[in-house]
Structures are given as structure tokens and as C-alpha cells.
Amino acid sequence: MSRISRSDSNIYPIPPNCTVSRKTGYVLANATNKYVKNGQTGTNGYSSHDKIGIGYAIDPENWKSNRLMYANSNYFVYFNKAHLPESPSKNDNISIGLFAVVKKLSEESRLSGLLEDVFGIADARMILDLASYMISDETAKFQHYSHWAKGQHLFSEGIRSDTFISSFLKKNITVSKINHFKDLWATENIGSGNVYVCYDSTNVNSQADGVYLVQKGHAKDDSSLPQVNTDYVVRQEDGLPITFMEFPGSIVDIAQATEMIAFFSRIGKDSIKNIVVTCDRGYISERNVEEFDACGLNFLLMLRRDMTCCRAVLAKYADQVKRNSNYIAEYDEFGMVVHEKIFGRRNEDLRSIVIIWNQQLETSHRNLLYSKLKSQRSELEVAIKRKNQYTKNELENKFSFFLLNTERTGTIEVRKRGRGNSGKTDIVDAYSIVDYQDNEEEINKELAYCGYRILASSKETTAKESREAYSKRDCVEKVFQALKTSMGMDVIGVACDDSIHGKSLIWFVASILHSLLFIHLQVLKERDRKHYTVPASIRSLNEITADRNLNTGKYVRRYQLDKRQKSILSAFDITEAHIDAIISKIK
Image 1 (tube, rainbow, N blue to C red):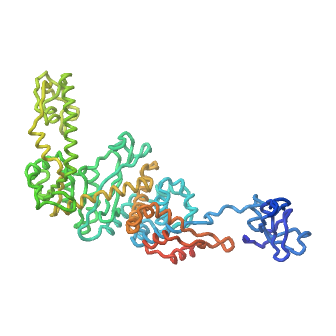
Image 2 (cartoon, rainbow, N blue to C red; image 1 turned 90 degrees about the horizontal axis):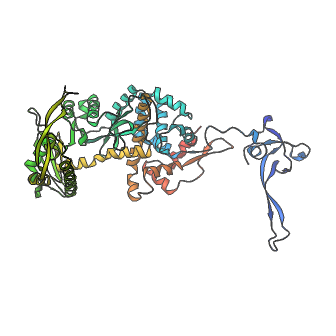
Image 3 (cartoon, one colour; image 1 turned 60 degrees about the vertical axis):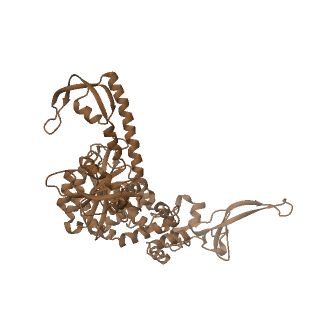
């Protein structure tokens, strides 16, 4: 029987066709009407009813003459829907599991404490709620947040609308506070000893107009789309995000690295002296290397194959790499370390140049080379037929793998290169190709260099250590993949710079929580890769619920935890008693 309020405001007439139990005083109504057949013959059946209590009679003995009662909630459902109570701000059934885990992780990692120090308690709780929403619903569209929040136990006091969230991102999460939090978080989690961190960037599409951060750039998928560039630094040992940065979509990787180096420089040399930053070939430049050295930050960089030093190093050492003493059994590769300059400057320091040879990479490089030769032969045939004109530099750079027979065919106007020559042109000799043949010497030299990749390290290292460190650089790619597939970072979805910065901070906090979830679930995932992924585990946690007792108004856990839920909670050292303690404090 639902709860009955015996007050004057809750007195209603007993509806027709209802009965009153003289023994209990409860008013009973027919909820269903069904025909029951005779069990033996199937004929001469009778009508039966399922009864439901709708209230308590004021005068059970004389209810036929005094047809008044105190109504319960069933009365309003069946007889007086116009007077049904308003929907509560929270569902009668709310999820507890994800809240319990996020609370434990954010407290142990000091994430919640640092957020409170920078943003204040109320705003820090709102940030945790929004980050929890991102990883739970796998979206960053905050217009659905209020619907999600009605069924979740929250850190915040109340459920906020999407209008409030929009203002919150724009006004409460300021750039100065974001930078302060990033400094504190990075200092807290860099660690001590020899620590490798991985640095990379990704682009996030946006349709916002007139926003400085949203510009057309160099997206791999579609360069015509406006975008925002997002850079992350991730701790290699466990994939924990350390910091992030936002840039206009038009800025290239090499230029973005300067800001990352400046960030570490701001933290202080004592904090970063044991850090090694690993980057791919898109970040190698003379200026970046100088800035790494200036702030005392070590680096491990992949060198581009077309760099002068790579050709020089391979010409000098390629025949020494594939020796037995250089074999790395764990990876079935050969590797050696030499000491050379990267850019060949007079006052440049010698670096540890790591030369790695791999059989599969050799096959890949060889296939690319022969594909390029085939393409260039087709281009040469067309050029001979059409008598296309080229400058001498174009012929040397474009067709270096061929011996060309050319003839001078006049002059051609070309643009001048170099600083101060913008818009200027020059007249140079023009040549057309008469005939060609393979340059066997250059092709054989290129074949000899297939299969090699070259790393440059600012610290003394071994080939095995550098190869292992660089092979784990994909940890930052995994963070980007999780952000885009599990946290909705495929589209920005806000329309001003301040909101972009605010939402990016929420994404960063969500990525931290997602990473901590992944770290703790690793042991379970090793034995069951299907049910203990982060998304699958979050779904199981969301099924741990508390139900409102309609008589007392308090929440209680109605069902036992299943085996999978217990395993997930145990990975975070959370017990059933811990869950029940959280439920008991729900207002």
C-alpha cells in the first residue's frame, strides 16, 4: 500500500464501485476485470478482479453513508490524474556506482582537491559532474545533461540546465584558472626519476564563425573544415594526461611545440630535469631543439628521412647496424647508437643518434620506392610527349632517380624564394626532357637505406631503451581515440573562445578520469576483454542503483550486486558497505 497522508487536504470522496475492508479500513478498487473459465468443463465461468488499495476510509464502519477517505498515490493514478503530484527533481531510481568510483579516483589522485583549490568547491563539483556525464553518456552535448542528471547521484547540489552550463563554461572556467590548474596537476603527476612523456596533437572540427581559435588548417580528413588544434602531453608509463593546450586550426605542429616547451619551462627546471619528451617527426626543427635545450627539457625525436643528417648518418653507419652485437631480440630488430650533430651547426652539441633497422619496415620502404619510381616514369613519358618545361632545379630535385637527356627550350618565369622575396619573380633557363634512364647508383643507394628509422636523443641512451620508449608513444593516440569515441570530442559544439577553453578543460578532466578507470581495470580486462573495457564497466556501474522508499522518502538499495559489479568495484577497493554509506547520505 502506498503512503497515505491523513491530513484535511488529502480527503477525497470514495469513487463508485469501490469497497472498504471493515477489518483494515482500506478502500479497494477493481484494477482489472477478467473472465475465469470453469476448470473442468471450460463453461459456466465467472468474473474476477485484481484489487488495489487507493486510500483509507475515514469511517470504515459507516463508509456507505460517509463516503470520504484519505487518498494514496494509487487514487491519483486511477481516478484523479489531474491531481497527480509534480515530477520530482530526481528520479525514484538513481545510479550510484559511477559516482562512487569517480569520487574515489578523484580523491586519491588529488584531482578533486586541486579543482577545489583553483575553481572553488561548487564549481569543482560541477566540473566533475560534467566530466562524469561525458564518460557515461559518451557525448559532449550538454543539452542532454539535465536528463542524465535526474537518474544519477551528483557531486553538485542541483541539476543544472544547458543554459546554466553554457554560462558556466564561458564565465566560471577562465583561462587564468585553467592555466593555474594545469600547472598544479602537471607538477603533481610528473613524478620523479626517468619519466617519459608523449606529446602529440589532434584537430577538432567546429562550425563556429568569427572565433579566433576556429580556423582552417591541415586536417588529415578534410582540410577545408574549420578546426581547433588540441595538444596533449601524456605520461608514458600509464597513459595519464599531464597537460593540454589549444591552438588555432591554422597553426602547424612545429609552431605548437614552442608553447608546450614554454609550459614545462614555467613549471621549473627542478621539476622537469628527469623528463624526456617523445615526439614524432612533425615536431623536429632547429628552433624547437634550441628551446628544449634552453629550458633543460630532454627529448627523443623521430628524424625525417629527407633530413641531411639522416642521409649522412646512414652513409656512414648503415653497413654497421646489422651486426650480431646490435641485435635486439625482444623486437627482432637491429639498433645502434652513434653521436652526431642533427643540424650540422658549428656550435651544436653532439646527440645520441639511434639507428634502428626492421625487416618489415624495409619491405614497406622498398614498396614505396618502387611505387614512386613507377609513378615518376609515367610522368616522364607524359613530359617527353608534351615537351613540358622545367627549371634545372626542378629536374634535379624531382627526378633524382633518373639520368635525364634534356635540351634547352628558352626561358621561364619563376617565383623567388627566401625572406624578403615575396611576390618577386626571376627569369631562368627552361629545359624539356628528351629521354631518360634509371640512375642505378641512386636507386641502389636508396634500396640500401630501406628499413631504417633514426631517432635523436638529448641524453645518453641505448638503442633498446630508445626504441622501447618511442614504440610506446601511441599512448597519446589512445587518449585522443578515447576522447573522440567515448567523450564526444569529434566536434567542439560551442561558439566562442571562452567556451572552447572551458569545454576543453572538462574534456581534460574527463580524459584523466577515463585514464584512471583504464589503469584500474587492466587486471580484469586481461581475463575478459569484452566485459571489462571502460565503456562496458561504466554501464555495469550505472546499473548499481538506489530506489526511493515512498513511505519514508529515503533511498535504499533494493538489489544485490552481481558478480561483475563486485569485481569492478573491488578493482577500485570499493565495498558494498561503501556503496550503502553513500546511499544513506542522499538527501
